[in-house]
Amino acid sequence: MIRAARRCSIALAVALTATGAAAQNYPVKPVRVAVGFAAGASTDIVARIVAQKLGEQWNQSVIVENRPGAGTNIAAEAVAKSPPDGYTLLIGQNALAISRALYPKLGYDPLRDLAPVGAISSAPHILLVHPSFPAQTVPALIALAKKRPGELTYGSSGVGINDHMCGELLKTMARIDLLHVPYKGGNQAAADVIGGQIAFYFSGMPVGLPLHKSGRLRGIAVTSASRYEGAPEVPTMAESGLPGYEAVLWQAMFAPAGVPPALLAKIAADLARVRENPEARERLKGTGVDVFPADAAKFGAFFRAETEKWQKVIAAAGIRLE
Image (cartoon, helix red, strand yellow):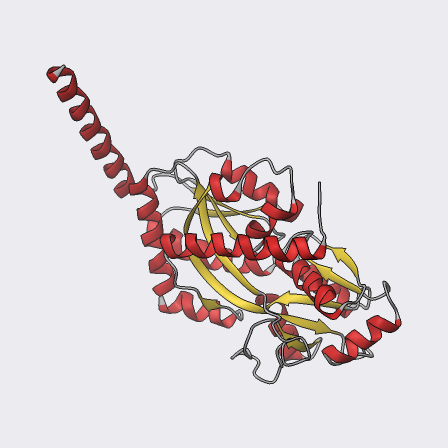
């Protein structure tokens, strides 16, 4: 028994040493990063900045794969079911916290099957309308919606995405009826606001802020608790007559559950270096988002809290998808 115990201890030590060595040598081949949105969407823009900087650190290709659809669940489920070897990662956002309550028959569990690596960025949404739209403030938009129940259309980058939930939160708090039009990416929704096909869109800042600054669209409110530094002239939804309204868009990296702790720690440390990189920070800020400096543990706790928050919002709105 003693000899058997010693053999087990030696085998465990060898395995741990091998795992640690593999983590230090990682990556030895290209890494794929899945994004659940079309190219040009807010999360895609953030993902490409991060992928480039990780590729420079690792001296390996980091390939962003766009797999839009099903509220980002196509991309997330593919990563959750990938080998836990660190070569398939996910850059996701609030939709992962929303999906658990919205879809009763998910093929994976975001809390169980994905391992948080760390946060990347966060920013409010900006509510965009065309400069010619008859409602140029949130109170005016609400009044127009009450006059035309079920007629005003708002876009999103997909069912169950945070920009969709911004609209649902507006509907619930203002007690109005709106028509939701889902797209495969935020840039497509914004394009249809410009073209007049839909009335408004709660855009992520990487897509929405340049449109607001250029005057092609007008930002009439932001969804954070306080005004956004990059557009201080735009009031908050709370200031616009909806006290308590808040919905911040965040992006973060996940790996499949089961990635060895040493390897997960290595990826997390390298992601932290990206967050601290002056050029990456400047590029992220230039797109309209702020660095979200939360490591795996802090972000994991935040992710669980976000899941609970959106469960309550979805239950109150009575939304249920198959």
